[in-house]
Length: 402
Figure 1 (cartoon, one colour):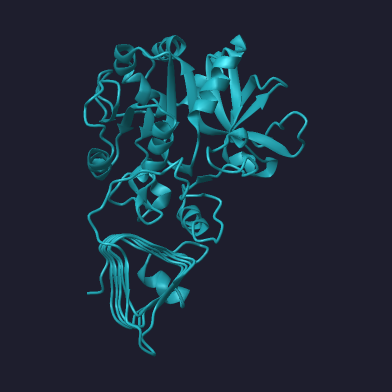
Figure 2 (cartoon, helix red, strand yellow; figure 1 turned 90 degrees about the horizontal axis):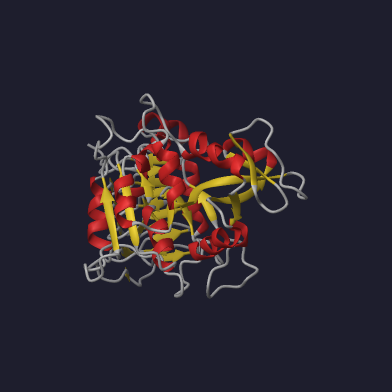
């Protein structure tokens, strides 16, 4: 069960017309592609995606790129809007989304239910977490990530004993409990869970007659099972990718804000990126594109372009422009003399001749006129565009100067 109904208000204006999991990332992907790829690469093929806010583009994306052809009945990626089976309400929290769709779990009758979010950038061999869940005889297993104690106040934090049995769960604590034997560090929940099916059904049905209110796994469900001693914390830092060095630290980024989203894109531009998209044994899948290969043209003095430490996607046309440390989506066109530095340019945008952009995010189909300058005078930029405190300028989808 993939929870993909997030509104993503802190990612505005990128979420003005789409749900957060549908936000494009890394030139050719959407955020939801990462969790779906993790499941498929882990040989888990029965996937329900629980959608809600502004979900049309995500539903179309799943239909275009995540269908298995209907050959096997237990191989599917199926979007599930709120069915209002439990009353006239939309999903009222992460656990309520699953509660409203318990019929899907009961009909499929799995041994284990995985409930994962769709908002993060990471690669995760979920089979290793399932093995841990089975070895511990767990009712519930929570994926966790070690974080510095001073940063843990922004997460749900677990207290564990020496056997990684969860003894307490606290949302955004002022004084986060430390990891035993590791002073200064705390275990943060990643919002990804495994449940013994019978237990999940039992505990959610116990909330079935509650007054309408938010029902979340962290706030409500996890604390219910701690007394039984069968809730365990899986250490994501111990997860290892097939085909990569065992010394490589797993990558996980919460991209809940514009600054975090931008930083995760910039991570991909490094010479040796922490997130390796080029591992053939763990591909990140997405919708395929009929766009032609990227093309660089003009080889004359004063009109010779380049791209350095950048991702250039299919269909891009670089006409004697310069790209440095940037991510270009599909079918982006840069005209002669344009300069783009530390930018994220989404599909279909066009940068006119001589335009200069620095630390700018362009949503899809923006048109930057010739000679325009953005990212060099923040006071002027703030008067025209959404701008973060750190100085990132964000142009909404379809922007063009009138």
